[in-house]
Image 1 (cartoon, rainbow, N blue to C red):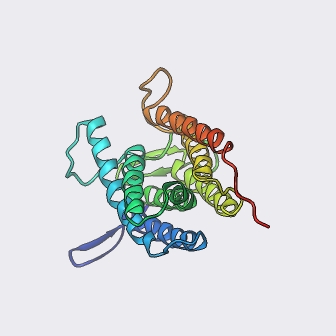
Image 2: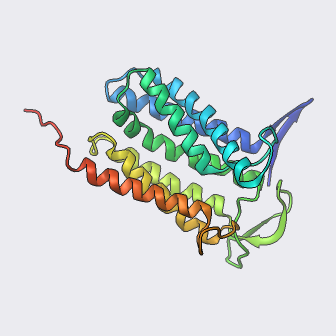
Image 3: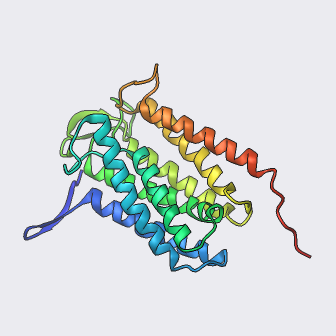
Length: 244
């Protein structure tokens, strides 16, 4: 593993931080393209991504501190569901400030959200930060002896699983953006797919059970899937204007 990519004097480029930054940059680029296709100012994507970055990192840190009793200024500890909530709220707030309808902004953000998450998980894999899975003897199982949370056991490389799965989700959502035109519709599909992916991968993660046989992430994921299903059912009642 490569927790630190390189150092120049006192500066060290950490793998996790680099991949998170690349994830935000990729999400910004695709959000910019999508907003332009929808007839909105593509420059609004910058402020939405800034909002997502700040809100996401703060939300992930605050939720981790609540769950684990850690400090808010420590150098480690993030939770994806805290980041999703904080990032979504701040990004939507930035979109409102840019006069973009929430339903259209949510649709435009669906594919970029999946891409950003997929790239961010590459950082988890390079850093070996403890997001890997349970012990495994599968041919592709690996150990993380040099990770920030090291292990010499061969385990499921769950960050790799998540990156591959969410890249497929990104590809599907990007291809469908012109077909699912009702407000919130594409975002509803994102919620179903992203929630399902995280719910399933938790079965081979190291997180402890907190609600019956489910982890906290699985409970949140189930809620995300349910919210997505409700959105899809509701938007199906909205008529899409026809032309010609």
